[in-house]
Image (cartoon, rainbow, N blue to C red; front, side, top):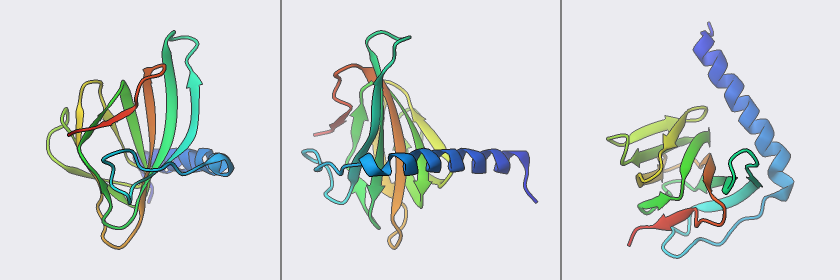
Length: 147
């Protein structure tokens, strides 16, 4: 039996999947940034200036982790909304406390100034991916890896 919460999560997951599938022909894999784990692949989905918020830009990317893949500790410019598309993602954001595991259809938020201490695929056998949506200053470096 489906509860209203489950129906809402399924609807959000379906919407995110439709957006992703519509954007797939335009996706281009990026080379890992300096310090990034080679297994984490980042693919741009789109980027748009926010006319109602001068100087801010919305940018969306898909981050795909192979089994056991992870990214080193890092922080982002602006705010980040993350939606798990497939698999399970282990995440710890300094503003949220301990490590949590997010499943497909679940989301988390990274407020400005927080550090992303853990970002990893929770599975050693299955791929996992998430859609990250940034709202940051136009021209900002979206991800900076900790030294």
